[in-house]
Length: 536
Image (cartoon, rainbow, N blue to C red):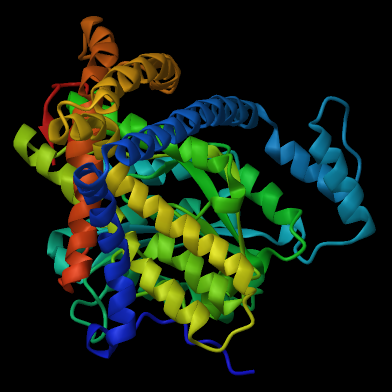
């Protein structure tokens, strides 16, 4: 059977049907936001029950999220303490010492009975670090974090994928870093992504894809099986936990079909959390909280930011998409359709630390945060792609399973755009239109009591926030710790102004066919301990 075409169609090739599916997320979001107003004019009782049911649903969901966050935090802490390299050795010998997790013994028994295709000694790790205009102060710590890993660096390849459009300084910086640190690795290379390649949007996808093809050439030249090469993508500010490589090696070594698996570490936005303004700290912690929760739901887990796949998988999918600015989440769907639905994402319960948004100047930081979130929210564009590719092109994907995944995708983006606004304001709408109606006037009181109970969940978030903080930099006094608690007064504002509005912005642009064809790189500034000042 001919392979399914997994490429996103160019804008000029998107017909009426595809455009209808692009309009769908925004149309649903705006309809849901308008529904309380419409129902209030028709029947206030129906409106009250609709809003109350919606809020009760989210009340139950928030409890579930808090439970998952606590479970995820505990799991991450346990996995950070595991001796992954020792456990990898035990996979090879088939004998494990006492005190290991139960799943480790089960893995040994399973691979003893049914050998896996890739042995631990065959594994080669590759990091592709994407950079555009980030300074050495941002990029160098990422390379050092890889070097500080508990792993043999002579089994690690590092590639700095830099943009020609970044200028001569970025080119010189990439080459200097490779020259300075490259000898520590099996292979190190700076790869320039040429500007203006036809058919590419301006974004990370084209950059890392170009580097990936250079990696393919090197691996082929060395006669290495591409299935034994695991490729992890990193942004310039992404710093893997020192046990990440050991944990990833272990997981890869116990997979029966590693070609069909993506591996997702837990993104934690804490690199510069002490330096970022309070609203950005709240958003960054919320992002870390959500990523931790997501790691506990493998059935719904998708590629995000730093993720890993075998080089063979990347070759089969022609690497990442060069036609979208959300190449990370979209890579899940490319792989899913390439392998006719036989694709999963495995969580790696160790963090990859990332920056909270911090630009040079408070106003620029506020703007940069919105730009980042609207880029993430552009993932709503995958809805049309999934429907078109899954249901209107020939493939062997199980349609029931695809339907559930599509509904998860759609629900996630619609909730992103609507939930914060409805939770904050919907209870007051029926009384505004029906001031004499008893039920409409009682709704805000009932909702207020529900929200008071729900506020107990803020203690879970506060615990998570303080527990995941890195050590306080030397240039901050103790009162900065107090501010880490007080900052949560910004939560309602950041949730609505940033989360909901960024999603609505992206979905509305998609509705109108005003495509985002440029990856707006988030500006990054660094605060040094020595002077306590920002440097770009």
